[in-house]
Length: 212
Image 1 (spheres, helix red, strand yellow):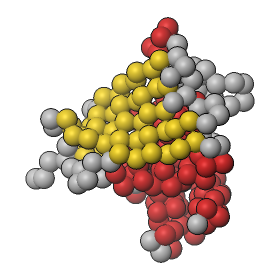
Image 2 (cartoon, helix red, strand yellow; image 1 turned 120 degrees about the vertical axis):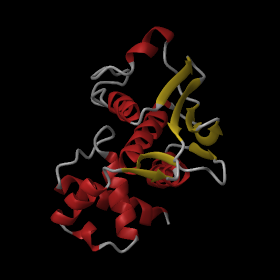
Image 3 (cartoon, rainbow, N blue to C red; image 1 turned 180 degrees about the vertical axis):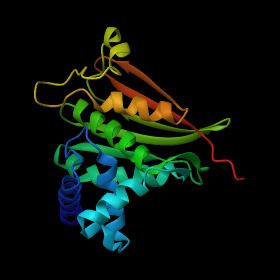
Image 4 (cartoon, rainbow, N blue to C red; image 1 turned 120 degrees about the horizontal axis):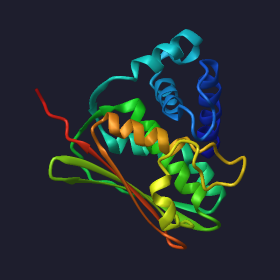
C-alpha cells in the first residue's frame, strides 16, 4: 500500500507539472490531490494535458464540501512521509459531519499546506492530529502538531507573503499567505495558537452548507 501511495504522489506531481502547477509544498497542491482522486475514479482526463487543465478549472467552484473527505485525502498523500520521519498521524473526525460551503479544490490546498507545515515543524518523533467538529453554524477543522512552536512576536507575521521561519531552501513563505487568502474568500476564519517547544494549532471555520 505504501508503495502504491508513493507512486500515486509522484504521478500526481508529474501531472500537475504538465499544466504549470508548482510541484512544491507551497504550490497548487490541491490540484495534485484532485488529479489523484480523478485517476482513482477512472476519469480519463487525468491522463492528458488538456484533461488536467479541465480538471483544474472544474475544481474552482463553490458547493457542498465534506471536510472529512478532504482531510482523509490529504492524510493519505502525506502518510508515507510521516511514517518515514516517525511522526504519528492521528484523526479525530466527527462522523457524520455536516457539509461546509466551499471550493473543494482550494480547501484541499489549504489543508495540504497546513498538514505539510505541521509535519515540517516536528523535529524528530512527534505527532500531527486533524480534528473536525461543529460549532453553531460553522464546520470546524483543526490541524495540531507537537512541533517546535512559533514565537509569540512572530504569530502576526506568519500570514505575510514571503515571511517564513523555515531554513533557507525549505520554503518561500507563501503557503500560509495563500491559505489565509483562500479562507477569506470563503468568508471563513483561520486562527492559530502556538507555544514554543510544545506545538501549534491551526483552526479553520467555514459556513455550513445550506440546502436551497
